[in-house]
Amino acid sequence: MATILNLETASTNCSVSIAKDGELLVIKEHDTPNYSHAEQLHVFIEKVLQEASISFHELNAIAVSKGPGSYTGLRIGVSAAKGLCFSLDVPLISISTLKSLAHQVEFGAYDFVVPVLDARRMEVYSAIFDKTGSEIRETRAQIIDQNAFRELVGKEKVLVIGSGADKCKQVLEHSNFNFELSAVPSAREMASLSYKKFQEGDFENVAYFEPYYLKDFILQGKK
Image 1 (tube, rainbow, N blue to C red):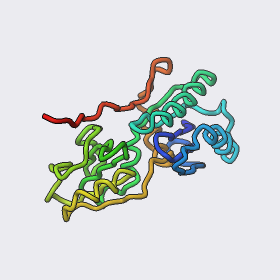
Image 2 (cartoon, helix red, strand yellow):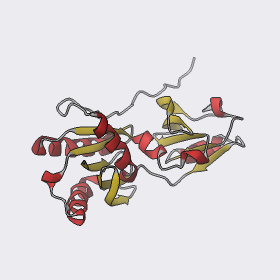
Image 3 (cartoon, rainbow, N blue to C red):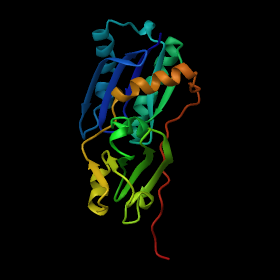
Image 4 (cartoon, one colour):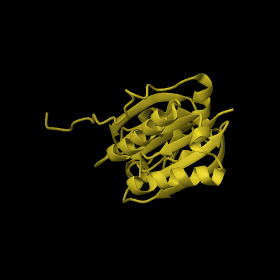
């Protein structure tokens, strides 16, 4: 049995869930471009515990979205997660933000899922998953141009999902590409992912863990 608190703050969505053995019990979230994480995160934590009738000391682990994503949002989430782990003496679990976003999709409905988070200008954070949910291309920071995701062009059904999908839709006009523009990372999908890591004993070092900022973009300049 494992009761896990999941924190998602990597994007505009401040999201908190509590799950038991991978099954979602309660979730609270609010998506706003104003990034309300500092004001809402701890309020949401208290609310989900209260609604689930679970005390802090009944938690077996804390899971946090590790990025990539907003620098400030990630710092807020990781700081809160570390503080809880230290005070409760429970393990810390980190979940890839892009993997969590990709799991909003029913993988069998698409042959490839490409979660993308908006970065700056025409840049996004992205990864590629196949129809089984396996990551087949690692997380990257990349510029979206006509050559982006060219390994998927003309293949089977592709879904590009996330806040960076609008940039992709403007440039990528391939017939096998589909776009979901409104999806944001959520603590809902973290429930099953964090439980799997708990079962595997895949924990982070609380003292030394840092978010995955992925700030090294490709530089564009004159040649």
